[in-house]
Length: 121
Image (cartoon, rainbow, N blue to C red):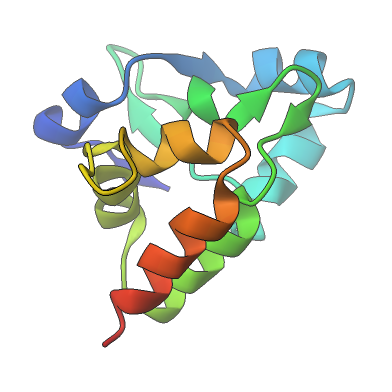
């Protein structure tokens, strides 16, 4: 869990606190923390009280966005840290179009994973 850089913080349009995610997913906050530890979500410390927060784009109604966990795994395998992953996911890519995070939420995970795999080469 990282302290977020202001430049990357500005890329992410909205954030959610862990208790809000737990409520949305109908799970305990401890389970949300476990998802972060397992690398299925990225949480960073931000704001005045440095509370852990997750990009809102990672949650789709009552579930984690499809394809997110696999994409995060690919990026980690490519040597990306949490901040670098957030920057990549929320930086517009003209070939998608939009950001990889938007593409994931639009169920275009295959395209996003293909680009993530290409980063390793």
